[in-house]
Each structure stands twice: as structure tokens, then as C-alpha cells.
Length: 403
Image (cartoon, rainbow, N blue to C red; front, side, top):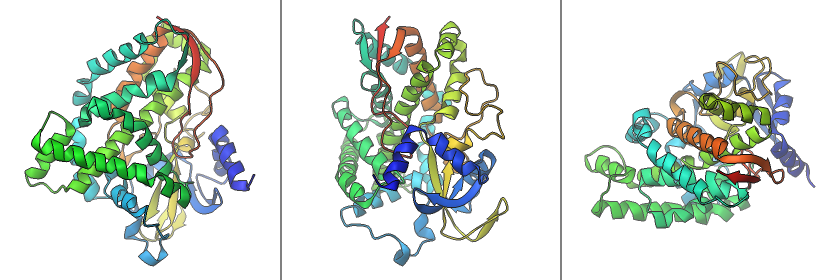
């Protein structure tokens, strides 16, 4: 087993132990990240400030000349083009423009209108498990809940939602920081298929508009606002992935964490008013996304450190959330913790657009699981997925009677 594979397996088992090694060198550290020189930021204050600093950008192509970029195989290039049209990988003014076009769909008021659908769906999924004592939480519950909700919001027909898992798996592999070029090529066709699917759906909505996000984006485009079809396709794909992949992890990681802390699960069952606070503690303690990155736009000074133009910076959310300068017991899980701070939805211009929806889905899902699974027990210790960015399980098998 080579050193990188060993490091990756250790990381999957306990990334927080890995993060502690960086923390020893201070909240901003120049070092090796899986064998690659990186600037690693682990402090909460520093990470939050960096998120809000416009000198740290997402569009590396603005500062890295073509001759210095990694050569991209022809098979992967269409996917790179698709990704470059996503607001997740854009900076102002394009990021601002794209975000404004979809932000109305994710306001707290609009999201709250989805509450009856989410509650009904959660009950339906659990009702189908009545009489069964063995369950796989992702397959039976936490995958379908956010998939159906985001599909309804975007306008994806029921018969096409089965494609989501395959496309999502390809996407998270593609954007993982430790993916090699062969892996990128292996998943490129699936991502291209997802883009072509949304291009087809957009064309269909041009002649058959409905009350959904795709039709709304088309109306904006036709009214003369600056939005092209490539950006529409990329936006739909991003919302589809981001709208369910992270929420699947949030629900599953959260329930697993409660199963590993039975006294707190019992407290939650006795007092459901703690659920919103429990969701924030889950986001802090076991976030769905462990890290993200930025590129330095110009030579600059930041928190006493000199950064050079075009350097890549790793913002380790999983470490920032457990910064000991914030809490005396950052590595303890406590649903009664007061004044919880975390960066699991990022901060600044790229603060997660879907945060209100993710919180609502997780709160409803957790309430249903806590109240309707009787005497739940893990059937086996689950395996984490092979990804260093997204924190989620391959499967979560448990035993419980469904009430």
C-alpha cells in the first residue's frame, strides 16, 4: 500500500485526527496536503474572514496562465466547460448575476411552502418500512427525501429521478481534491449525460412551461436578462447535485451520530424542541462537506502570512468548526450546546443558497426518525465513502421497529 492510499484510508476513518496535525502549526499552515504543497487554513476566524475576502477567488483560470495549467484530456474538457458555467465556480459579477436569478426559490418563505410536501414524503417513506425490522437508511429514506424535493423544485419528472444517484456520484468524484486524471475520465461521460439531460428538459419547457425553476429561468432569459442556455444547464445540474447530495449526508450523518450518543438521542425523543439546535450541532460536529478551496488573486498579506498570486488555499471546514478557540470541548457532540457556530454552509458571497431548505429537510427528517424508529440499533459499523471533500457513508444498516 503506497503512502497516499494509506493516508486516504486514515483520513476517511477519522479526518478530525488528521486536521489536528495541521492545527499544531497554527490556523494557517504551509505544508503538504496528501503529498501536494498547499496552504491549509484550519482556524474558524481565519476561514470565515477568507470566505469574505474578494482577493481569494474561485476562478483559477483568471490568475493561472494556460501554459501553467494541468493538461486536460479531450474527454474531460466538456465537463470542465460545464463546471466553469456553474455559479459555485464563478466570482462576481457572474456569480452575483447567476445567484440572483435563483435566490427567490430558496428564501425562507418559499422554502416553508415545501414543509407539507417534505412531511408527507417523510411519513410515506417510513410507512413503506412498517413490518420490516432491518433498514438501510440511505436507500430507504435519506436519499429519496431530498431528491424528490429538489426534483419538484427544479421540474424533473418522477420517471427521470432514478438517474440522480449515478450523476451525483460522478460529480462528487470529479470535484474531489484527491481524484486522479483517470478517475476524472471515468466519470466524465456520466456528467456529460446529466448536462445533456437538462439541455433536453430546458428545450421541452420552452414549449411546455410549468410552475418550476427551469421554466422560471427560461422566462428570465426571454425577458432579456443575461443568461445563456449553457448557464441554465449548469445551474440546474448544480442545484440537483447540491440540493440532495449534501442533505443526504446531513440526515444520515446526523442520525448515525445520535445512535452513537444514545443518551442524547433519548433527550431528543423526550424534547423535540431541541431538534433545530441538534441540526446545528450535527453541522458543526460531522458536516456533509469537509473542505473547499480558493485561489489567491494577487500577492497579499493575510493574518500575518504572505500569500502569492495563483497559490491554492484549502479551507478546512471540518477543522474550523472544531476550533478550540471557540469551545472548551470542540470534539464533543452536544445537542444542548449554546451559541453554535459553524462554517458548514460557508460564508460570504458563496454562503450556501440552499441552507434554509437543507435545514428544514433535516429537521423534519430527524424528527420523523427520532419518533418513529423504536429502539434503533446499528447492524454494523458503516463505511465512509472514498472521498475527502464530501463526508458521507456508503450505506447505514440498522435494526428498528417502525411505529
